[in-house]
Image 1 (tube, one colour):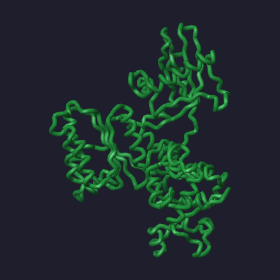
Image 2 (cartoon, rainbow, N blue to C red; image 1 turned 30 degrees about the vertical axis):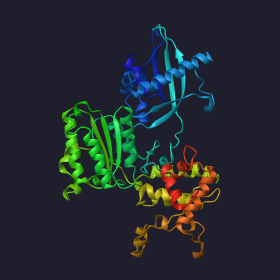
Image 3 (cartoon, rainbow, N blue to C red; image 1 turned 120 degrees about the vertical axis):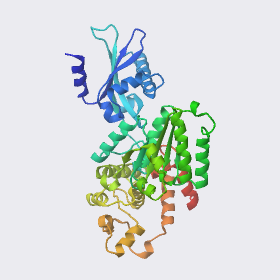
Image 4 (cartoon, rainbow, N blue to C red; image 1 turned 180 degrees about the vertical axis):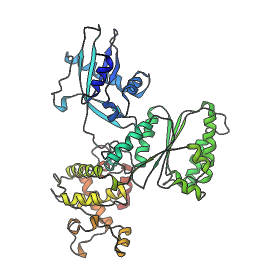
Length: 461
């Protein structure tokens, strides 16, 4: 049988594994990884092997760390393998980053063996992903607009999109993430920006939605001033810039950016632009608010993120994850989400996408009792207006019995007071801790700094 035959057979074996060759100096070299690497980390097998041979690459660093752990385990245990039957607590782990710089933790088992046709040993390593926890509170939304190492993408639509993103991750193309507000554009863009940072490029993120024009002007002048007119473009460093809502970049700053990009291109200095937009840039160009020259110079590859209403498989997973993790911390026990409530959540149109999903889940979890998840949703102004015309979405609005324990007007409390009570309850459960994997920020799905700001605003101590 040929080597190609056995490689093809190995690709069909369930699970992810790597094979190393050990030379006479006892250095281990990766010679094969099966096709499952593509589904988990986004690499083609041969691409991952080549990256492991590149000195200074992050894959090389990760592979070397794995080999060192295997060597240490072999020395301490005097065994040539790890028993896959060990409890999870006793199994060793390693960490690899995907092409989009998502962090994956794996349990690994290994076996060191020799074959008659080679004087040197081989190492076969079997990797099994540890059940991925949300790396921070933002991750619970899988598309909330914050960093998210656990971007849920189980729906066929998202599976196809993520394959496209993985394929674009290491290509030096400018990328534009388009879609409705709060669909995860910034989350995916940040993952690619982190990937650029890991490759050694200087990275910056400009959130134009929250950046005053004066600060925007200063930022553009600072970045462009590093090369323009100074003759330093020839020795400039690789750069990757993320513009959150690039449509808000002023026309003047668009011109400055275009001139700067052209200068770096002429000097053959690598520059990559990642951008998000909730608007059609073509319409902005017609209105004179976005530079046609800049648009066509960048020649974006576009990634279109679907609204939450089109991601029912992902939404089901998110609901289960929220109710399981947060209920555990709030000591609500195992919360049961009834089939009726789940159908209401899946059938609702979610015009506010993940921002609205966050708010609904927070209110619902606060209003739930041990063992039972109660759906609580505050009607938005848009829905109230629609109700007047008889066009309100009844996906959740008709579930009065699930909206909590409000029976009379006297039961209603101001929304800010409800938030105060909720935040105090969460802080009691975390002993006042805000940061960290067991902190209140992670539970609440927001950045720690954002939580601190809300606590200050509401007077919660």
